[in-house]
Structures are given as structure tokens and as C-alpha cells.
Length: 126
Image (cartoon, rainbow, N blue to C red; front, side):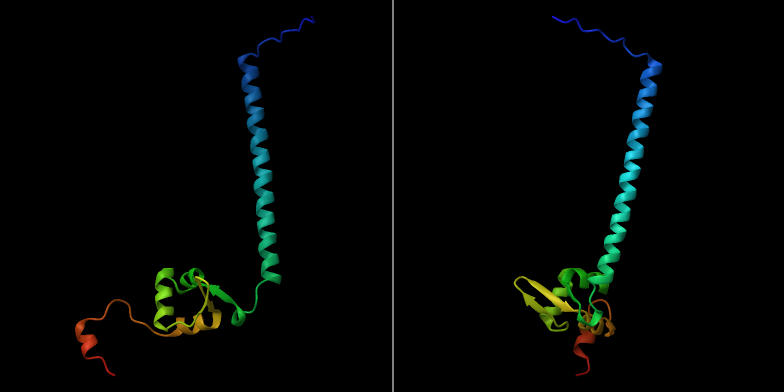
């Protein structure tokens, strides 16, 4: 049998120095990774913007994206607009697709917020 040499236990000062060095290594690695991730994300956005963004008049968007663009509206309400015929859309399986130009036309239509009172409904001009 070969006898193994026992190493001396580290002192408190050595343990603290080792912990500090490990923490610095981890922080440096995290910073490098964050910088690389940010750079890659920025490059990806630039490439997508340059090559994959069609002109707005040809762009097709989903109900969720339309709700974001309209603002203060949930996707369910956008589906109601489509069902009422106020917003033209194409149905593909279970998803509605909306043309960008149709959404811009819809956004330009003035609307009042809130429900109509019975008087407004009854006396509304035809």
C-alpha cells in the first residue's frame, strides 16, 4: 500500500482568500456571459429588423399583438371586434390573423369608452 500524504487544513485567512477568489471568478464569468448575451440579442434584433421585417402594409399580426398595438385592450376584446365584423381578420385553424393596414384603419376610427346608457341607445340617430 502506498501511504498518502495528508494535507494541512487551511487557515481562516486562507479560506477567506479562497472564497474571495472564487467569488471574483464567478462574478467575472457572469459579467462575460451577460455581455455576450446582450451582444447576441442586439445582433439578432438587428438582423431580424434588417432582413425579416416586411413592410407594414404587408405584415400579418396575431390577436395578441393587435391588442398590444391598440393598447388597454385584451386579446379577448380584439376577438370580439373580429366577431362583430368591426375588424377584418382571417381565421387560420383557431387563430385570427389581422393585416397591419386593417388594424391601422381600425385604430383611426373614433370610439367612446364605456357602456351606453339606455337614453343613448334609445335616442341614437339611425
